[in-house]
View 1 (tube, rainbow, N blue to C red):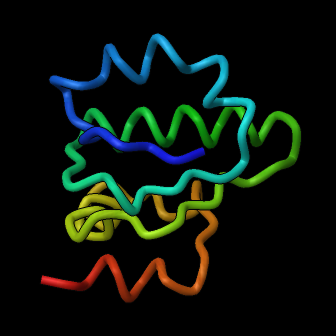
View 2: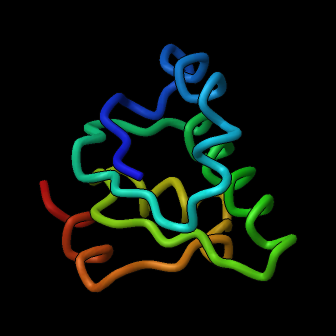
Length: 93
């Protein structure tokens, strides 16, 4: 599933209204997401936890640059699987 808007407090209602469809998917393409904040990260954690009930990981493709610092800050890295471009894209400036 390709996400196209920022994963921020201001955009959460957009994603929350789609959560049933989103939470059924085990892969999220974040290549078009320019920004994520702690609210967006919490949303991704909740998505991951919903999949964990089915023993499926949430795989993130090309998250925004500020994703890894947030993951490190909140210690939630174990909630996400990643593709090869995960680390590279997350460290671009």
